[in-house]
Image 1 (spheres, helix red, strand yellow):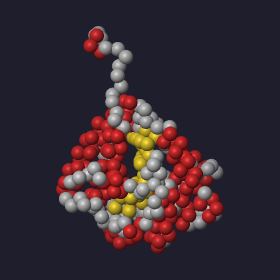
Image 2 (tube, helix red, strand yellow):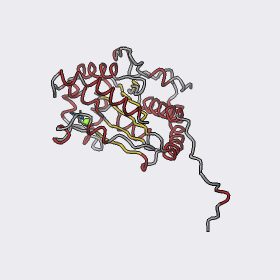
Image 3 (cartoon, helix red, strand yellow):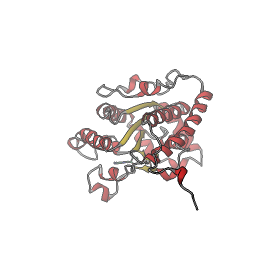
Image 4 (tube, protein in one colour):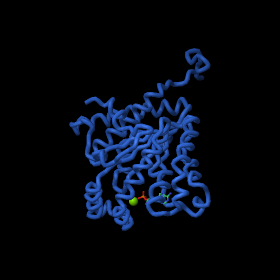
Length: 272
Ligand code: AMP
Ligand code: MG
């Protein structure tokens, strides 16, 4: 199983037009063996623990992981499966909901900026500022003039973050409309899951086409070198977990981190 190619194959090439209908949500990019994938995710989980300690010790940069996708695309499941090895002390998950009255009285990035992780930390956004060009666009919550100016504003915002040592990885969990149907039906049938459902989810499903158009534009316009989008085929949960964990590990490894050197010789110190 050659995992090194995954990130190259799944990245939305900056500047290139994304066509979601050309991308198969059930693809596994040549990875065939589910059992092997599970083992690789477990291996990555252990590596992530070590790499997070280094990130924390170095205290030089932050990692921000953005998760977007339709209802039931697996945002919560990805957090549970991929991130479960990391130390909660150095990680914060922020779930962005319908903005409050106070949030609406500020610019759309105000609440986002406040949640950006500090140096040494990992931040996970379960939904994000992208909702402001997705749900907001699909439901005309602001005028076209306002939402269509946002992709450029987002790019500038993300550039400022990346120039200030925040490494940004954005994942779009790409599921098919059929897979969503299956998952929503399962949710409804299971009392341990149906609390997650809302009638609104069914209304959003009817707007699938409009959402895909909005996603396509967001992925095309906001896929940049400093904050790339990865389009993760997410119909198969095992592949989704493998792809996301692999890309995170490769990114952390690319930092080539080391534990800080002491400015004294610990051999010469006696603890009394
Ligand atoms: P959930 O992720 O299921 O908890 O749902 C959160 C809801 O908040 C989703 O329906 C989102 O579309 C909605 N939401 C998140 N951010 C915004 C935003 N900026 N404007 C409007 N709705 C939003
Ligand atoms: Mg929901």
